[in-house]
Length: 86
Image 1 (cartoon, rainbow, N blue to C red):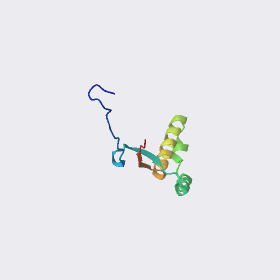
Image 2: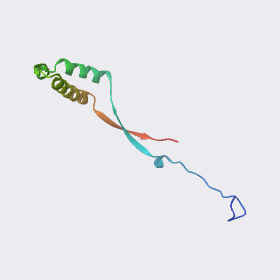
Image 3: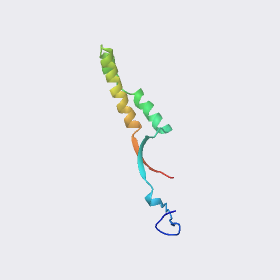
Image 4: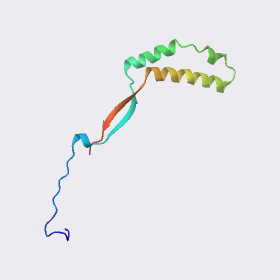
């Protein structure tokens, strides 16, 4: 109720698809084929630099560097659009 007029205001809220907010989310595809490819890469990887390092922290650093490279190669980030619905 308002003092502007002697009747109630009328309004309509339109929710059209093109006005909904869209956000991007990055995900990784863990399909059977990608998991198989990941395992294949790890089986054929050369760990001689890791095994030759006498310091555990440096060996772990080398191992993680190799592991992350294969992981990112086999499971790349993919951007997905998410439409937020009310």
